[in-house]
Amino acid sequence: MVEVSVSILSMKNENAIQTLYNLETSGIDYFHIDVMDGKFVSADTTSKMLEYCEYLNSISNLPLDVHLMVKDIKNYINSFLVFEPNIITIHLEATNNKEELLDLINYIKENNVRVGISIKPNTKIEEIIDYLPLIHIALVMTVEPGKGGQELIPNTIQKIKYLNNYINKNNLEIDIEADGGINPENVAMLKDAGVNIIVAGSSITNSNNFKEIVTKLKA
Image (tube, rainbow, N blue to C red):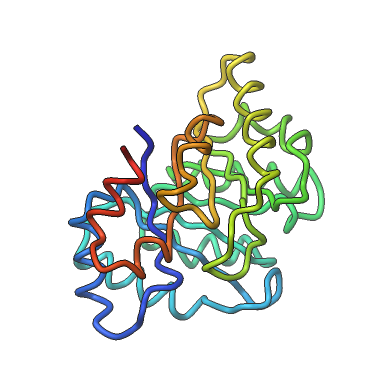
């Protein structure tokens, strides 16, 4: 069974605390915090995600899965460390060189947080192979990062299969997370490809029955 990390990017602002509570009781495993800076991607969700994390710290015991789509990575890590997240994932494409990426990986781990590396749909898996033994999660974007409600890009499934085969062949202990356009209609092919954490946003938050959709995603 896969774990479900619910993206609250598309969640309506009104009655936010009640909605977060309803999401928690629906059977999800993580709250996925989509942090965007208006530079790495066009949208800027920083203030909204800081506000939601403050809510969650006071009402929820579920782990936070923080996904940083930002250029000034170190400062954003520090901004969200105060919420004691379970996971902080950074984008390969936002780093300038290998030394910077290794420094960030170590910095996150030194703060007792699991670390993930994310790649965009057009970035090859080979570009993160060397880092896989050092991280806990590889996040494959199945849409272009920056906004919710997009359709899953089909050729990203092959990337996930390749990644899963490499992980199994090399006996690595690492989770594969997929993010973007995931719903009950296409989740099976992601599971078959090797994904064990799925990020689902609008397919859950736009539904009338959160628990029903989460149950279908996990089934």
